[in-house]
Length: 87
Image (cartoon, rainbow, N blue to C red; front, side):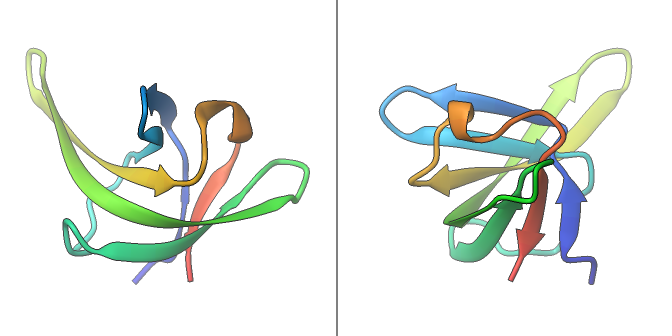
């Protein structure tokens, strides 16, 4: 199983923190914590527990992505070009 993914998009949920979306769909369980590292383009490593959610957009064709709520991190902590690594 691949353990590192480019972060496609980051957004903030007020009062909860950062959510990072990846372009792939994995078999990781929803609703349980997954220890992760966010690796920034400068090499800084941020550690968090990630909780998986499914994202589905309906445009002309459905687009499915996974998103992970990153407990303890905020959108401002995750610069463009960062990667999500499962540890």
